[in-house]
Image (cartoon, rainbow, N blue to C red; front, side, top):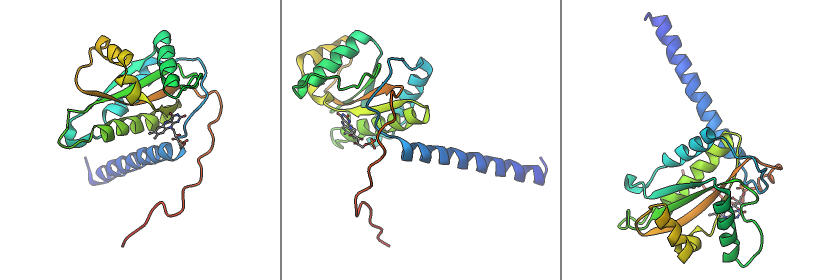
Amino acid sequence: MNAKLRLSAVFVKYMCTFAVIMEALEAMLTRRSVRAYTDEMPPRELIDKVVEAGMYAPTGKNTQSPTIVVVTNRALRDELSRLNAEVIGKDFDPFYGAPCIIIVLADRNCNRSHGTYINDGSLVLGNMMNAAHALGLGSCWIHRARQIFASERGQELLRQWGIEGDIEGIGHLALGYAAKEPAPASPRKEGYVRYVE
Ligand SMILES: Cc1cc2nc3c(=O)[nH]c(=O)nc-3n(C[C@H](O)[C@H](O)[C@H](O)COP(=O)(O)O)c2cc1C
């Protein structure tokens, strides 16, 4: 390759990298929690991409302490919704109608000496939320996974799914197509960041 061609190749590579970085930043800044979903199940390819983004989140000492469970079965999704609502003594769908629920669990013993399993699972959820948005899907972190997977029924589900270890529920990701525009981001609090130079 002559010098001119080599230079153009470097330029194209630089511009592509820049474009990817911009897309990632755009996704992070414009993602919002979606709290109303249509019934439409996202195609498996898109769900897989969201999950893959979660799998590549960093974990303490690279222990990969989380486990991801993708629930697309309607009966199980509805049961998880009931269990979740029960934790706070309410009668509503805490998943806001989302057809797909991605559960993030983590093994407390995986990196006990470092104790990063909650951080690890949270980063998985963060990656998945940003990836979902980048792919045109809506998502929302739904909490109370810890209580559900500490319960008798939760433990039974873990056994059914063949998940062993000292497991804690970190969170659920409600995933689907937004039925309405999510609320805009609230203003960032005063003093959120300090630069020490
Ligand atoms: C740890 C955690 C738990 C959350 N639990 C819930 C929840 O149970 N239900 C819900 O509707 N939103 C939940 N959210 C979403 C937050 O309410 C939401 O991120 C916040 O209001 C900011 O809005 P945004 O995501 O649109 O920026 C949770 C978020 C986090 C990080």
